[in-house]
Image (cartoon, rainbow, N blue to C red):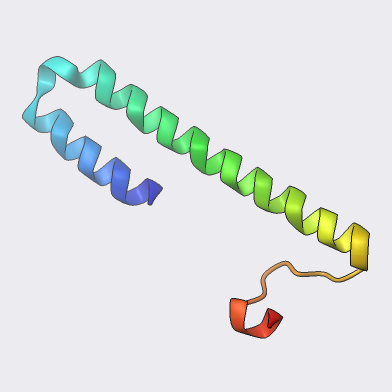
Length: 65
């Protein structure tokens, strides 16, 4: 989603050069939100490992059912 947002925002930057700062800020926000999601995932994986001693990193949804 972050890559798609960056592509779309970059295209908009080329079309509307008066709003460069706003589009650039949205790109930075998108990147920061992706990092927050990555950290939340890591925290959840650590919590599961602590609670049930099961390593759920890098497993597909089908494998965990």
